Image (cartoon, rainbow, N blue to C red):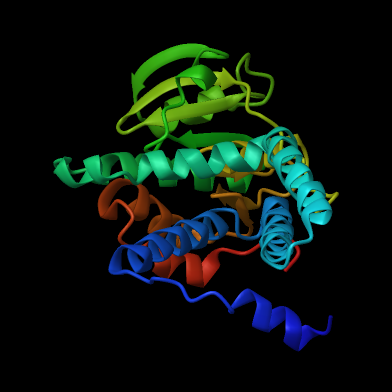
Length: 280
């Protein structure tokens, strides 16, 4: 049986195609596109594409009557879904959190109007001073994803944001200087917190635990993480699994405006301007 015979066999039966069938196909296609977009630039993306090819082959085998091959492919597909759920748990968790952060209930949320200019000024001053003095720092700005589990690993502070407090916490040999500081809106919630380390093999070997921890949290949440290198004072940003290094005063101010004022409206502008993988 050649290819033309197979195609003729597939389309030999006339289907009663209804409007509901078109809607069904459209929904499935939209769901698949959304799933692939969520896992884009991850290992899971390639595996999902491979699994899709096997599903298509299984359907073709059923339609042309290759029952044994169809049974083998169905068995592989059902096992493959379980394997994907286990092996790619971090990627799937991130995708589900992304869905949760952007659900339709956010339509009814009321935008908060508050002047955060003082907080922005205090954070800018602290970050620039620490960079100049080469004081290592790891500052996490909570976004839509709650970080209560991370906060519990550190020391509760619950204080107003001031540059003096930030610099004192990260001062050399201070009790909490090695951990991460968690900032929620206009409050320093906790310090000395432990973050999950990234297993990204593309991360430069010259970057230490602070950068790997900041990137690790950005892979499982939508938090913004500012990192100050203790070795050279370089300011970096980790967000959505991406790391941008060498932030200057202008970029730092744009970032803080993004966190406190625009609430995501500058995401595309900033992403296209400064977001990049380390080493690019």
